[in-house]
Length: 160
Image 1 (cartoon, rainbow, N blue to C red):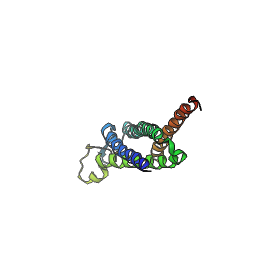
Image 2: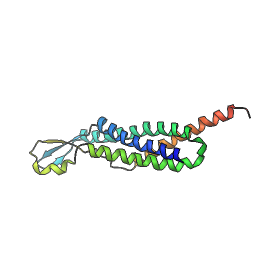
Image 3: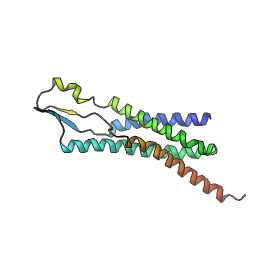
Image 4: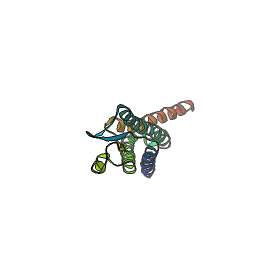
């Protein structure tokens, strides 16, 4: 049981690392202050989508790697790893999101009172859908599945 707790703590730590990487790699679009208030161009909306893609790719890499390694090391625990991996990877995704939002630019609407026409502000790192968060547990489970499949092939190749 302590091994499961230790590997879970590793994944939560990877959530913090993922948030730092997201903050470092993501390039949010910019808002421009006009007579109409804060507006974004189509290009800036694409930049927001790219921020989400970076978050998803970080989750894919971290969770698949962790799921594969932890699944191999913890293989003797069996099916009980499935809900543990799903929950821990989901929480790690939430941690990564919160770290990125906390370190990234603040919400431009907070500074709207002190702006002049033409001023540009970076958009906040944001995830505005549920699906990017679901990628984290899905790929942790895919890693677990790969580990189980590879470990099974080891068992089959050994004679009884």
